[in-house]
Length: 187
Image 1 (cartoon, rainbow, N blue to C red):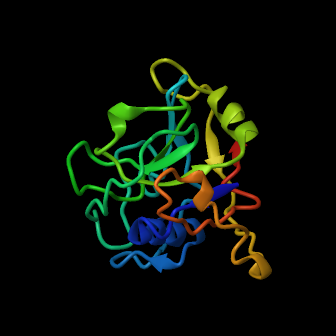
Image 2: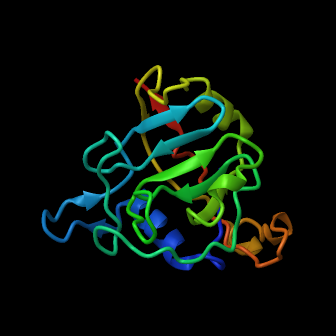
């Protein structure tokens, strides 16, 4: 299950959702741009998981739905919870593509103000399972592929819940809970 903070960072969440569900075709190749079939190419033991290279599959590629890169939306949210999801950029401002990372530590303040946090993995069991394939160098022990993405909606409760109580600043959030993925498939 994943909660996405669409009120705080709507463009970033829109990019992630489009890539989860293949809503966007590549402007040149006309192929579906999607996380489905891509791999967790980097798992640094006790630190983070990285995925989302939708074209090269090795951490060197990826592209946003807005073009090669899009600008950092804001840095309102911090890496202050285990499972924080943020855009993985090229090490310079405004280079967000399709790659994202998920933190494994409760707090990673050194990343604040450098990467846009846009959600949180709510399922500790999945985080633990993914983390078990990590190495100190970051090369996963096995190939882990994103097999599927889906959403669970509950219109009576306005899209599952309002997780604003989870956010210290009360900025609110638009949670989208992923009921079946992107649970990894271990090859």
